[in-house]
Length: 304
Image: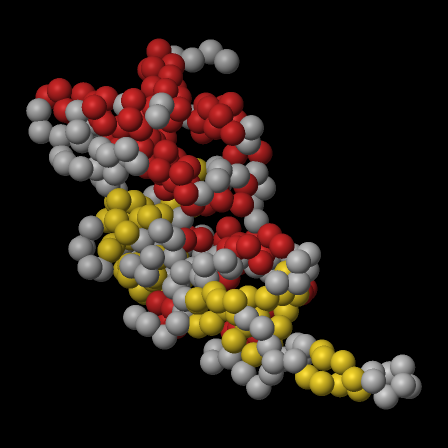
């Protein structure tokens, strides 16, 4: 692939920054970021700004995401805003960005087909409806490359900002307004839910669970009795899930996070978990691991 000098320069810098340990970056050595890439202070001198400028901030955003969210097809939307800002800042093509990502993660984002969930909340014109939304992921990016804590943050969408400002790998990117600070944030539509639905996205706590056994008479005709565990009680219901899904609920679910991040809603059995939880808000979901038989109660939290 023939690369212009500027493209080659940014591509190499992007690769180098993304693969360099935090403690080996010049920004860390200058005391601007900590060992996890979090900003400690603003760059003040000209030397500071050489090692921590808008380009560094944008690449570090991707780097911090990588520490939390494995890169892959199902997680591409979580990276959309960060990758879009890099594309706009550097004028790197999506093809070149895709080549870099494929080299690092053996995953080519340009080959991804859009999922039905990628068009959530979009009307026929591809825009968001005007109103207030709640952000559902951990990190929310500002237009200037800085970030804010994301979970539960309320955002405003108006006629002035309900259209995409651009796209990355066919995923639309929007600039909405953070209600608390008034600042412009950048995101993909799959990272938000309408504020009116936020009550249905309550957080959950996960705890060990063991139902009270029931003494039942055996069917062997000998009049013997045995203990059996029920699969449903007055205030709970048990569902058998695969070990991977069982593990995802180890620490519960963040408030405002989508159930689809924890359950495969295309699977009939796991969709039943979602349907029960949505229709029975005051009842407890009990998950049983299909491999080990372990039980876990997923209880709703009434906080905030």
